[in-house]
Length: 232
Image 1 (cartoon, helix red, strand yellow):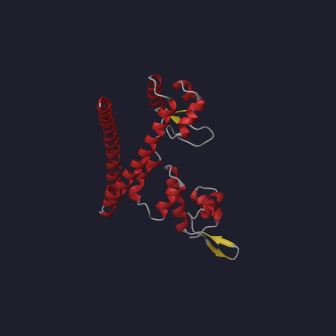
Image 2: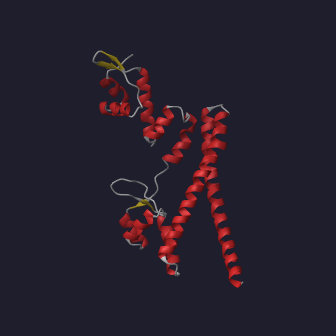
Image 3: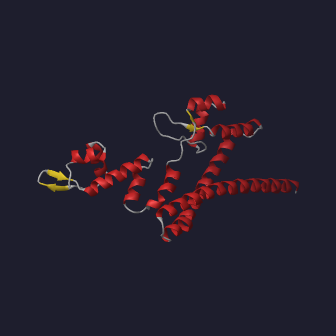
C-alpha cells in the first residue's frame, strides 16, 4: 500500500510539514516519485510512528537518529530515557532562586557562567533545580566564614571542570564494559533493557557515594598535610 503525503500525515497522526521536516533532517527516506506525484510506503509509515513514539518519550532528534540508524538498540530505550528524559525536577525561576537563596541575580548569573549552577531548560525562562538552594546555602556559609567570593568561585570552577572530565570517563567505562557486554550477550531484548536500567541506577548511586566519600577523605588528608607542613 502506498500513500500520498496527505494520506501519510493522516495515518501517522502528524502534519504534512512535520513529514517534510523529518525528510529534511534525514529521518525519513525520500518517497518514490512518479512524475510530479510522490508516494510513501508502509515502511515510511512504520518509521514515522517509530519517530513519534520516541519523541513522545522525550528523546531528541539526535538520539532518535541513532536509534533509527541502529547505533542504539531497542534494549537501550529505558536506559536512554532515564538519562535523557528523567522525571523533571522541581524548579525555580531566576527571580525565585534569588529571593529564596538570598543571592543577588547578577551573582547567580556569574555562578552559572562559572559552571556552578545549571538551568534545566534553555527556553524563554530558564528554570533552576530547587536543589541549587542547598548548594548556594553551603557556599554562603563559606563566604560568611571569610572565604573570598572570587577565590571560592575559582575553586568551584576548577572542581566543576575536574568533575566533568571524571564523569565523562565514567560514562565511557560504563558504555564499554557494561552496556556493550550486555548487548553482545544477545538474549531477550526486554530482559537486557531491564538489566541495563537496573545496573545504571545502581552504579549511579554507587558512584555518587564513592565520589562524596573520596572527596571528604581527600579534603581531610589535605588539611592534615597543610597543618603538618605549617609546623615545619
